[in-house]
Image 1 (cartoon, chains in turn cyan, green):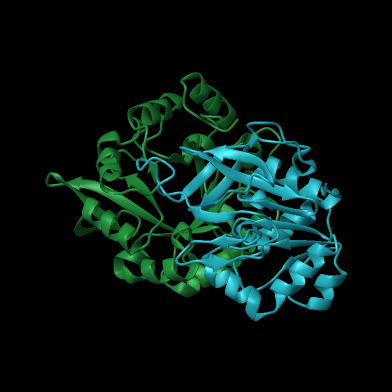
Image 2: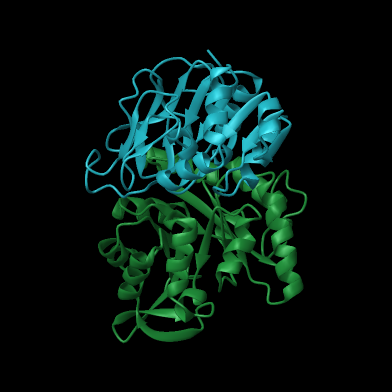
Length: 205
Length: 252
């Protein structure tokens, strides 16, 4: 069973529907017992990093996610949920993330040309940096759907794929059983579903 | 680099898609779920559902249908029509919409944009503007393009983006239904004024109109159309192939 972590951030209807459509048994929950019993965890998220990190802390789910990840349970962070896997973010002040992956979340403003619009919204191509089972059904340059203004930097340790938007921005990061997608696989059509399928089947390294 | 988006728009009344012809493999073209699946499989980058129902029962049907679409179609969904309050945002977002477009609701209460953006994020709030030339200026129209608000359009759009609209759909009443191409002049004026994604709507008559749109206005983000897709005059895979041949970056 795959548990989508409910900590009061965003709308999880499409995410759960997409997991079910690839054959997974999926549930949305904040119940620690259910989360601990689940085979895999998905950490979703939209909105601001600081708010989301605070909500995770307040509910004690930050500790639970760290413990479960340390036990080797597969964890997939999506969009802001992926950013939360890293050490810090400088979105509206400096905030601590879960620290499960090395790296820091920083604004793309200043890194990409000023002529480009922010947020980076739309379908963009994946460029592979190193092989990863999470992308085993994906071809280089397949497009996925992004909506974000910040991105994970200094994460060479876990960097799996990038996308080009005036600069190469982190799109997929993974190390052992901890994985993250900056884009929304649940909104990325066939390619996104293939990534979710790979996660559900097992994509830890 | 980010790809240019092609967006079919489906008008829904009492739970059924208005207009539309037969497509191969689609048994019921008036079924929003079947038509949405067809477009998604054809390579549509996003879908817009526009609720043109007036009745309360129709509203309920619309959200039921939206939920069905969102449980089967995994591309971004934008919903518009009858959005006048935060409760309306909430109602459609809970059913799987990713973005909500406001038009008359924002004209009646511009602060709705600010409230929605604060609650759901700028990326969730789309301003849809119906614009027509009147007395040598661009004017905003309300109520489905029937009522001249007297407001100058470029200033209005800039104001809405300032309030938090994360994307703008510019529907030119002057070119809508004429099938002579998108309103390049009007779109250029909007692109000059704001730095959020701009979606062109109104006037597409064929593939060439999309090519001209993206070549003449490299900063425009997406092209939206309804009837030419529903009537099968333009097939999305063919359109995207032609765009690619013309060196326009698309998702194939």
